[in-house]
Image 1: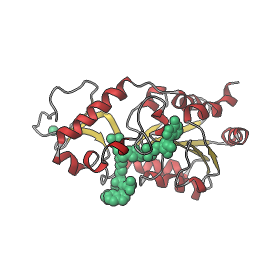
Image 2: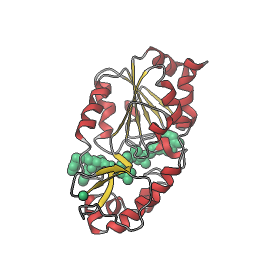
Image 3: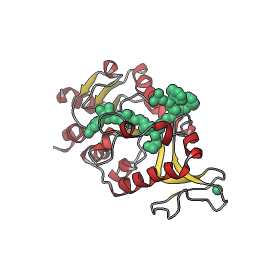
Image 4: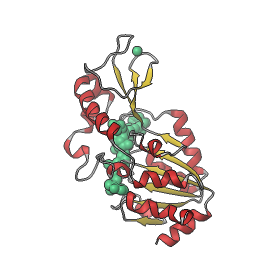
Length: 239
Ligand code: BJW
Ligand code: ZN
């Protein structure tokens, strides 16, 4: 199995990784779906929509503050660092649904954050936006303009940042290999990226211990965790 993946990676010009919450699971960040996922405990419609935010901003902010603390302490795992190392040898682009910044922390250079960043905060009214690592004393925090601040993430029903999304499609359409890691592929429009790649003749490789709704579209499925599978993809360049 790995021989065949290594061969594809060796021959590829451009390699695109599409990543989701599963790649950060081994860094201690919970996924959304599945046994220990957030959506098993909480209702996404009460935490991850703009209506929920205006309905109960304190509740939404409390959830984000708890996650921000955990994420700011988290370290990239062997999966993130393998992708960053592969970038030294190949043209590697990371299209991530994650908001945790761990690909960048691992050293990956070309990272497009499709669902924003939990570290970046923006105003609900004016154009203020900035990275903020410190916690807030009062929730919800307010902007200088007097309106509420919010995490700069993409909630359900909100559009993805248009320039980033356009660029992501362009990379998906022009890659030779797409490696899809740790995502259930149930959230649109990110889950259409493998289809853009496939339509343009790319090889699709999935790294996920579980089957997904798109497993049948994959050329190869690696049923292992990302921290165990991804380092093997870089081995051929480093041995
Ligand atoms: C491992 C592992 C290990 C575990 N190693 N693997 C009806 C009404 C309104 C909207 C819609 C609707 N129907 C469809 C929509 C569109 C909606 C959507 O897709 N909904 C579906 C869920 C039904 N999408 C949107 O709304 C998007 N915007 C949009 O479409 O705009 C246009 C539009 C406007 C209006 C109406 C309709 C369309 C925006 C989506 C934003 C998603 N936001 C979140 C929260 C981000 C902020 C935050 O983090 O707080 O993004 S939700 C959550 O899901 C998060 C993730 O990025 C995203 C994807 O999840 P992911 O990464 O796939 O994680 P999991 O948990 O699902 O899967 C983990 C996987 O890892 C599993 O497969 C495990 O097996 C695996 N795994 N351990 C490797 N160690
Ligand atoms: Zn403001």
